[in-house]
Image (tube, rainbow, N blue to C red; front, side, top):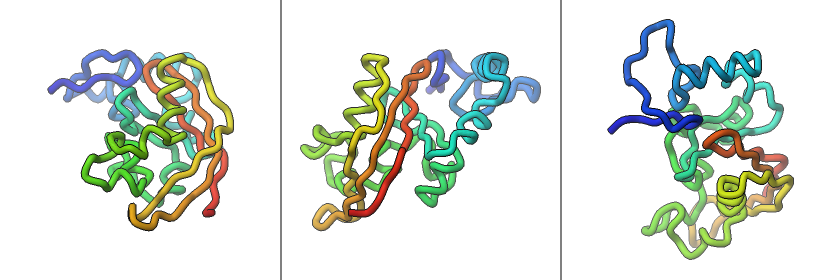
Length: 167
């Protein structure tokens, strides 16, 4: 199966020459170079410069990248986050149910999911949306309140965690 760039949806070659290496595994060389040209910094350096946890989410609710603040917030490394469903990455209690992440009755009311989809479909950014994340076991989840913001960039949505606290 051919991998696709999260910015342009183009097919990505599995073996790029050293002078065409991707900045991240999810962005093709051309988009990486274009981003560097337009922004003056590599993509990962750009999202790492944002002083809040940032997650890059594609149209299938898969986390494609995160910044250093996002990895620190989750206490996870890139390999535990990349190409994983958002609910799995955030350890949503309902993602552990048999139906899986995005397919339970609880998912339809998830503010994180709804915000990301809204921004993906409309292109409209959302700012400081209240959300509650249910972590742990479905029988007795721990609730984490947060405010989130979303912004569409190309074919992905940047999800920013503005603040969070246990309830």
